[in-house]
Every structure is written in structure tokens, then in C-alpha cells.
Length: 197
Image 1 (spheres, helix red, strand yellow):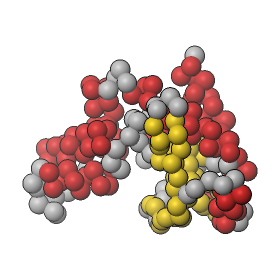
Image 2 (cartoon, one colour):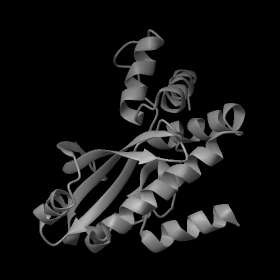
Image 3 (tube, helix red, strand yellow):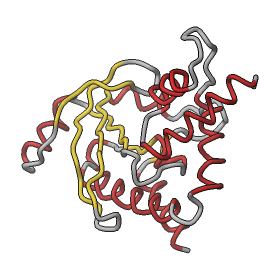
């Protein structure tokens, strides 16, 4: 990684951890904060994630594991609520880089795209429909809500991303680092048990 990319990645990582920004906005803001030209080559998400892990290891090693555990427990609760829609957890909560400022991203794989929304309405859950970037860079409908985390003592953003059932096959292909990019209920339970062990 060249010096500019490294500087952008380090600055973006700080914004991700300290302000809860997503990778894309963090890269653009880091570029602006560093006063670099708009056409400067940006680091990729794997490079940002490596810097986020370094930042957490250096500055948040005493608090981040507990915050991550609290987010995983909250994600598990929502995955259990939405179990009929084949929920999978992805992003920072799954990969272990989440902090108390991170949102939870759960992908639902539905036979009928409206069924998840109907389930929330039936359970009187306040949510906001919106479009977010999906796991292939496409726009995907998300049902966004705030859920209370007792362990963190605050509300956390939970985004239920609605996919067709056919998308599940492609969702489990290894990512650029060869990792499983998301996990189902059983996989998340195993992660939590490992943390408790």
C-alpha cells in the first residue's frame, strides 16, 4: 500500500471506530480531512479493515470485546425473532471489528419480500424502510429500527436487509480473504459460546 493509501486507511479506521462511520463514508471523509485531491486512489475495504483491527488492538483492547459481545447477543435476539426468514449476520458484528457505535446488519432471505415487513407490523415494531448497499454493491431494501441493548445501556441501529431466497446461495461464497462472509443463527450462537468459554 502506498503512503497516501496507508494514511487514508489509518484516518478512515479512526473514523470507523471513533465515530461509527461505514467504510465508504469514512474513506471519503479521510480524503477530505487529509486535504488530498478527490482523484487520489482510495484503499480497498480489506485494507481499511486491517487498519480498524490495528486501531482496536492499540486503543480499544479493554472495551471492544465486551461491546462486540453485547452487539452479537442483540443480533442473536433479532435473528431469533426473524428466524423464519433465514437470517444471516454480516459486517463488523460477524467479523469481530464492531464497537458500541456499530450498527447491526442482518440479511433476511425471504420467499416473499413483503413477508418480513408484515412480520414487523404484526409485532408492532417501529421501523423505517430504506435502501442500503447490499453485499454485491447493489441497492437492497432494509427495514431499519432501533433496539435497546441492556449490556450497552443504549439503543443500537439494526438493519434487516431483505433479499430473495435465491440470493442465499451466492451470499455464502467466501470473501476476498477466504472467510465466510456471514453466518446463520447456529454460527452466531457458536461465536457467542466461544466468547463465553
